[in-house]
Length: 237
Image (tube, rainbow, N blue to C red; front, side, top):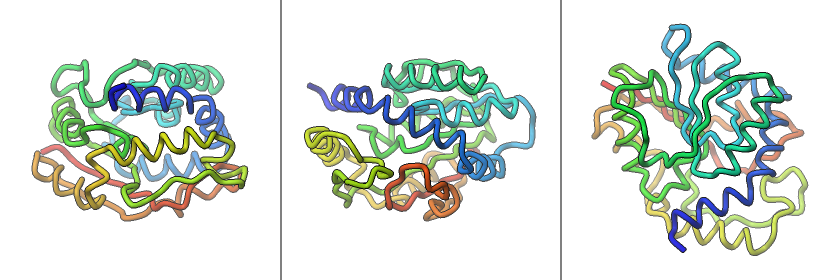
């Protein structure tokens, strides 16, 4: 099985768990903290055209559509898209959802005002190709907001704590998660330094925060790991 297919299979299996976690976040106090950070970096216009790359269970699609923006959410996992559809309905939101590879977008050039992404780039076989594609579909002056973690030196482990993100999953699935991670090119790079340098190279102006987890992981009812969560804010020039 190809690496891409293994990644898709893994997230299909994890989709229901992540759907539940995202619903908890959306109903709790973390949602407002996420939105506060994102809004601080959005262009000051109404009805922005936003791509949620790796929408997962639709967290950002819901947050941003609720404040009036036109959101398209994509994910390579069909089961994740189903969870996003469930969540959009539950929170009475509208967004366009598509099963799509974030490294090969089916959109024209200069199509979006903003791209947002959370916990996606560490799972991609070719992050550099994804960043090139995202640059292509952003309008001049468009904004990329990417939240992710440097997972290269981390070994994921099954935890007994019910609030942990890896609680309750099988040993085989934990093993597969680590195996996939170790097979990805991005794990050989120090992040976010690698991302920042590459984004600058292809034409972005970049700012970043090393760790925002203390700002957005405050709800004790939600499951989070202890890995620092960096934030990249990049403008296409």
